Image (tube, rainbow, N blue to C red; front, side):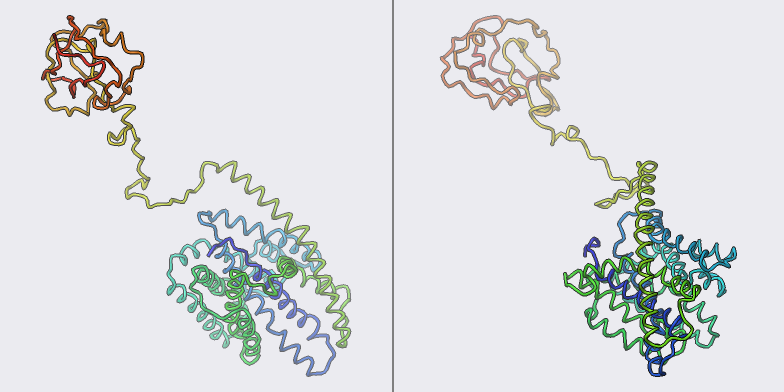
Amino acid sequence: MDRNNRLPSLTGLRWAAALAVFGQHLLERLIDPHLDAPRQVRSVLWAVLVNAGGLGVSFFFVLSGFVLAWSARPGESAIRFWWHRWTKIYPATLVTTLAAVVLVGAAGPLQLVTHLTLTQSWVPRHDVFGALNPVSWSLACEAFFYLCFPALFAALRRLRTPGLWAVAVMMIEIVIAVTANLVAFDRSTALFVGYLLPPVRMAEFTLGVAAALLVRSGAWRGPGLRLSLALVPPAAAAGLFVPFPVNQHALTLVPVTLVVAAAARADLAGTRTLWSRSPMVYLGNLSFAFYLVHYLVFVAFERFGLLPRSVDPFEALLATLSVFALSVVASLIVYHGVELPGLRLLRHTGTSTHGRHRAGRAVLIPTRALPPGPSARPPLATPWYAEPDRAPAARYAAPEPAATAWHTAPGPVPAPRHTPPESVPAARHTAPGPVPTPRHAPPEPAARHAPPEPVHAPRHAPPDSIPAPRHAPPEPAPTGRHAQPERASTGRHALPEPASTGRHALPEPA
């Protein structure tokens, strides 16, 4: 399947994943600590939103691997790939990190350096990965995925269908095994190792890459989009009955992967879905900026006292709508004012730099196998003029016509010993006979007084092809000292064929 096909449903689903993350942070920052409501209402909201963030982030990781594998360009260098990904995520990340420094403050050198270099998920300290803009921990994982993708994709694309299915199953087993083994540890250790550490989350990214290769090859077997989406709520509900960190993404990983693959197949089949409509696609493009700014909006509301300590459900709904609306406005500003301009500027600069300094280093993809050898270069094509059987006969290899009286020396001419008649033109390589050929011999009288309608032979035609004259009158037998007997003498350098009989042929001597 063509990698250039657009997958709008996957873009629209990004907005749904961003809303899931927003829901969990709404629970943590507003509903759980501040909502004054009946226990049943709080329980339902808690059950729906408590693991929504883990579900949304897991979807982002699987989707990232799928999309990168789907859109991978043959022959693209690793440096160019990393540049494209860096220009995509870093401008908005830089701006929101600096905004967090102004809004939150109290950022030490370690926090600032790790957040600016996207390495905060490698430091097992809550005051590092949870500082400034806490949601940017997932970008540290994405940066690690991007670093590994060229080698990972090169390895997985060589596998056949059974190997890709084996990789997909192995990645699911790794996620379940790691999270299950971390149940016995304290929550901080389980959070860092099972939820934040990039190599552990690499399994979900690899699963997305394998799924993309299976869909591209046509070997994917799975349910449709509606059934795949219907499997997500039961899996999320099952997470309410298992401990942390299994409840974050281990149980929902399979439904999430099915949703990603089913949405891609629906787009390839041309099926219109809710997620492929233009408003959803636009919101999906906005989702990255929304993901980066929404937590900072919560922090701003708390800092300026816009979130009361105790709210009823109606007031909580108004506060939720206010935070959501301001998050959308801020994401529009970041998307149109930072992300898109930065992307255009940096990629244009990178393209100009590559074009100026690397113009002579283009990568050519061979269309046929190269011959073995130390240089592995294709052989140079033999020119047509170097192949005797392919040389045009009329230009270089045509035998010359039979010589007339003033080209031929009187007397016997020896025939060739070993040279084939057609391989060497007679007039070109004829050795001088016993009597040198006169250079300024007078032309034959018959040739001088030709009939008014001559029929000439082609210039380079072989002697056999000279046609006989149609209306030529019989010519008298010339008597002269330059007359040539009809019989060709045998010698070393005789002409390949006897003179043809035509209007310029010499008659027998009188």
